[in-house]
Image (cartoon, rainbow, N blue to C red; front, top):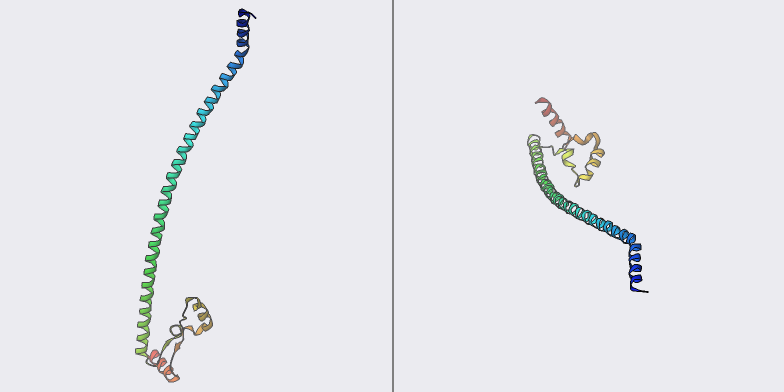
Length: 154
């Protein structure tokens, strides 16, 4: 093979390979474009994730604040409940002492004398006593008659 033939063979080979070369260049271009697009999507996703993380942090902080406020309000409510119960007990004691002063032989109402030690038994005691729950307890029958006559005459 002469030099001319070699050159012609090379040119023919180059000409035959041109379409494949063009196709490969186009494929490379498409792949580069796809990579660029994927990188943009990745960046967008990172931005969205960062925003979601920021929102999550803010919501968590708000949740902590609200939880703390609820705990404070519950504590205040418990304090007020204790104070209210104490005041109610004082009023009950005052009424009991007033009744004892007015009616010396009367220990008090059934409700006062049969107060259960635990609140869960309160309903059971009320049901067991039935209509006698508001009855007045007296030391003897003579006190009972004296109390009724004093109460009805006044």
